[in-house]
Amino acid sequence: MKIFSRSPLIVTVVLLFTSFSCAAQVPDTIVVVTNQKNDVQILDKKGLIDLFMGKYSAFPNGKQATPIDVELDAKLKAQFYQALVGLPLARVNAYWSRLKFSGRVKPPAVEQTLDDVRQRLEADESALAYVYESSVTDKMKVVYRFD
Image (tube, rainbow, N blue to C red; front, side):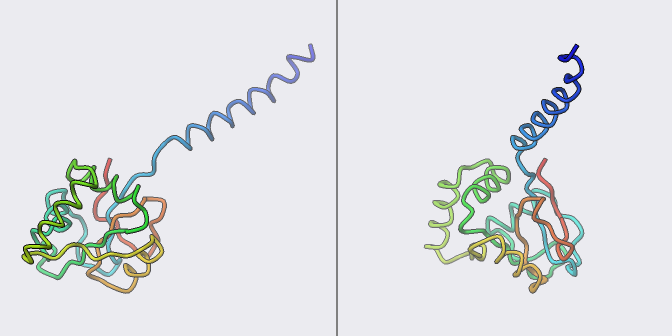
């Protein structure tokens, strides 16, 4: 009988452990954000590709856009470009090396950390960056979500 009296406790502990281990395995969704005051409400994937790969330098409404890369979070950056254009980060870097050499287009601005990105987004209405959804603050506006 003692086994059965403890079984609810055991079941609860097992369920809690399972919940935490499952939550740890689910990757955080990457979202693209801009300043809350920016007029842009939503962007499509093609528009993001055009902005982050140098084809355009303005939002669809014609206002200047400043795409931002996160330098020190290589995992986030690699996940973003894989989801955006289906290329590994090495290929994206090679792409930018060729374009920078030609001098025709300007690569995304670079911020070192996610905190730097957050500060830039809060100060610059033209800023556009990718972050984990859990990092979004009330001063950011989500304009695209990778599912």
